[in-house]
Image 1 (cartoon, rainbow over the protein chains, first blue to last red):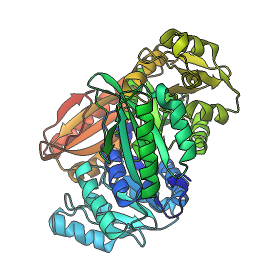
Image 2: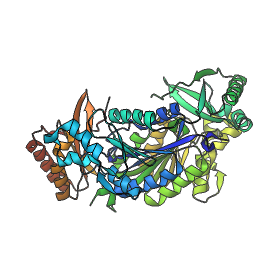
Image 3: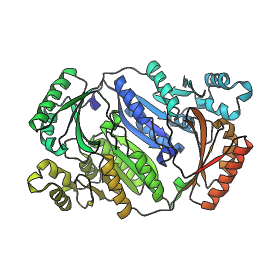
Image 4: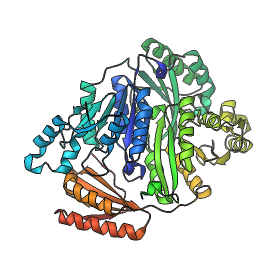
Length: 262
Length: 262
């Protein structure tokens, strides 16, 4: 059984609110950060959607993903300007009322002071009734949690601080998905048949095959993922043997996160 | 009217098929590449979904996005291994039959030679009936186009070559979305009210406000996007004046693509 279907595994989805990502103006730096953190928390990221700064699109994404996962994270669109519509959109998706959150107002007052707390800044305190604050240690304007939706800033430095808080205060740690990576110098197609046979034998483990170029050379990473340590160990040894039988030199990369560079 | 609603603008969506992205193992390098290319082609990217290597998830994403856009691009999952299920999943989504594409087999034969064309490699020629090949100049296995879905490899170097081919051979160039970026050193909340007023006055232009840290300093980029050059020019000048009125130093960054670094 794939770990995606394991009821004891917590699942999460991410909604990136950002015209600037879709227009190619800005490269998203949050998705891989959240993915790595969730991996370490024993939470499986099952889907990511990047949607434009349009209420209907945000509402649709929130309502499509919310029932499917334990946690929905949103990034972006919680600032003071007219194009910051995430709080209002999430509120609408949940069928709740938007209000000035007293704690959020207090946090903004604390950050800006009475004189500087303009109406534009007060807008950043608008949250659904029942929202629980997610502190912003960098620039004052907090995110919030409501039901299973966690609304965070888009600026990576702020998002990272908010995510750490969410992990600490809100996330239940699930059964961890363990993984082993075996790198080798064989072309993918040379191991395909044997790998397929191994996947069919070791059904408790998900085996992925990822070709890559590194320093100009085509290589292959075989990634085994599962929740049962013993089953993972047996399957990993079988993959190592298979790589040797195919004439390759297996290289155990353990849990190391590989990033393809070109 | 936002350019998102302009019927003369071609729209595209991207489906990234990749457990390795969702697990945090690999950082996606394709989304921003496609977004920038589409921007230059006058095609607006309206949504991106990252889904796991699970047939039902791929089928759902393809059928959800296909009717909404002119072009759906998929990346990943077209290799020879058991976890490469994109071709079969797209075929199922479109309700078509999977076959060994004669041209794809010829391309693989040409790349590998008779002796080396194993069954695993032949699997890479399985495509829906009616598929049009997208050549792979790097590693032989082609992608394909079927209806408005364009199936590409996940390895960035290969995806980039396939996307260039698609742009050259398949994409109709639409009305271009033009953009101007005005950077300044003001906090977002200081311009929020005036910016909102400008957005309400210049409805033909989408005005976005993006705070960023660069070399440790909080800055702000105001991005104006629209299809009418004259309207964009007028709105841009109004934003520049507004920044000055708010006590900031506007800096025109034109079409430069900014990437936030931390």
